[in-house]
Length: 316
Image 1 (cartoon, rainbow, N blue to C red):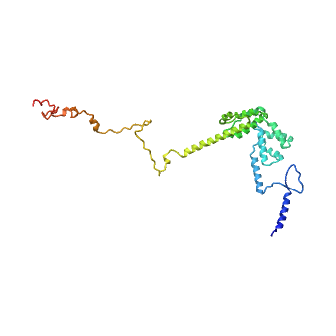
Image 2 (cartoon, rainbow, N blue to C red; image 1 turned 90 degrees about the horizontal axis):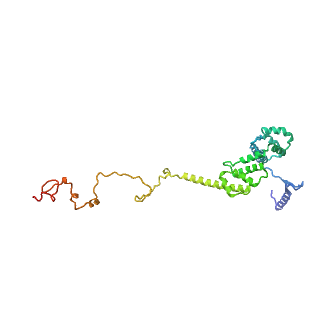
């Protein structure tokens, strides 16, 4: 079917009028019966199933509350409230669902007082009134809270701040900073004290900055250690196709490192050198001839002297 320009213009005007009557839902305005209210809807059944699965997984993460001294009722209620809100539960459904997470003494308490508890808000008030720790218990729990190795500053800060609020809702900022600094990690303590934070927010900023610096330095030191391991000083990693050139060592150069002396074998016969012969005295006959016992005189043919010094020469 071919739509002419006039028909197209007429359809456009009708669609424009229809869209102009659509109003966003607002709490402070009345809605006329002729107007259309825009409500976001899920596009498919897959999205609905996904939200149901997500709500089930969120509810499964909750821990049961028994009312023991080691449990924090306020922290548990806050956790339950967050999970129920993610699961999109209404207050009436929250009141029904929370009964499944009461255990031990807390479950017995609810059974005996169930007639006085009719809704979710009343349940929270009654539970806190019964199981809220005393001032001394809250103070002791706050002082014992220290930053665990591997725990981030942000997680420690909010947990410790919550304990400070439970111990004293009107605690001053200086006391809060005192307790925060008292339980912080030792690696951050000196840097926080040096900066003198005035408010808890400044404490968190300073601690997080130092935490990031230390994480960066630890990463750099780890990378340098890995680099040294990848390039060891070992001949087994040498390329066999590359010829290693060794720099010659000058034997006449002095060295402060004492080298072990090497003994060489002595020659079997020491022959006189030119310098040794030049050191003999030329005017001494005893250096020119063998010993007297082997000398033979050519005049008297006797041994022990030569013809020049022959004692029998005058007699001849």
